[in-house]
Image (cartoon, rainbow, N blue to C red):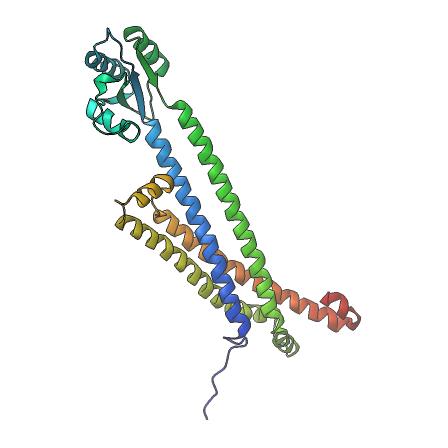
Length: 315
């Protein structure tokens, strides 16, 4: 005699299950997209802050009785004499002309205009020098020199970065909240159409944990398919954006986008976050299915013990 193979208690494929896969995939994609965007904003803001805070600028205004070349070298030597400075670079006339070219045009003769000259000093970010003492010494030795330590810009950038990260985190929480509610209602809707299966199994003596486990396995497969599809699509999006950016890095459009948004790459931690989001969505759907089945069996027991509670339980 041949034994017929046992089929699954819950239909492995139905309209509700397919719809739930699509819903979970969409919510997983949005959650991973938001997570990646927050990660990009944080890394870009940190890069901006690091680039600004590791350099200071000494500006020397031209004067009739001032030897500019000597003043530039003297300012550099004074700055490098402080603990916490690493190197100094004098911006020559050609580089200064290139900086002013977008506003004053090409072929600029700096000797004909009172254009300030710059000295860029690289500092130790972890142990910066005494800026106030450096500023006072420069003022005494070279009255035409002014020191810009970019503290104002750094403070503004840090504030902007924190605000942006907070906004991004808030958006991420909203997306996760919407995902939770969507998964909960979609799971309950899919279970409501299979309520008769739960009732039959319960009436023939199946334990509540057994029924819940069967439905849990079914919805675990659905959630894994949906969350994996959405997460993979988000990962593909970031990988494609990073690849296209690297291929068009020399174009003006890409340069402007890179300066504003940074590189479209979430890094290893970002992809790990996408993987963690997929797992969280799968667990969320599975736990929701289990608790919904247990609640359904509890309602069935209430109705069997007191048929008059039918309307109250259903409401």
